[in-house]
Amino acid sequence: MSTQTTASVSTHILDTSVGRPAEGVAVSLAARSGGSDAMWSVLGGSATDADGRCKDLPALPEGTTHVRLDFETEAYFLNNQHSFDRQAEAQQDAPRVRDSGAFFPEVTITFAVTPGEHYHVPLLLNPFGYSVYRGS
Image 1 (cartoon, rainbow, N blue to C red):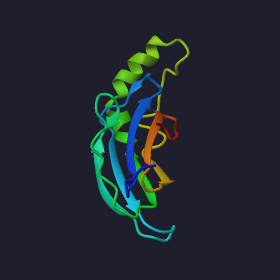
Image 2: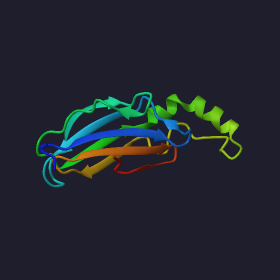
Image 3: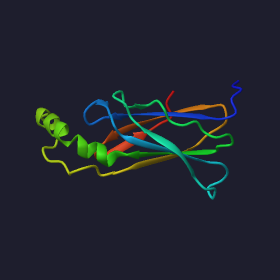
Image 4: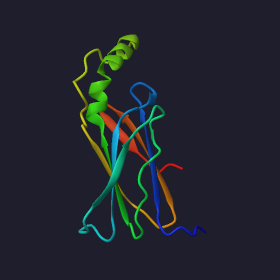
């Protein structure tokens, strides 16, 4: 049993459209204590590294019951459009023309936490969809 009094959070992003980590995505972390009517407190943020990971997210305050991760995905897709176009040309079944940017310009994930637990929340991302899960 853990003796920690707070939960901890980590995340990473995999771009499933190109089969590699998503580097340079801004991620913001917010927390609240109490029910759904409680106010969010933005704790800070980070950006994903070359491995798609945020290794320096701020610690959660004691009493945190809910966490929100905000991923700024639009800038990532706009900044990488040329490499995505080259990859699509190399793949026979890939669409030849893409929208600019992403269908989801930002992704917000909200989840409940328990003190003493660690929550790893990977984001599987592509220009037209995303999936998240509690990792290990």
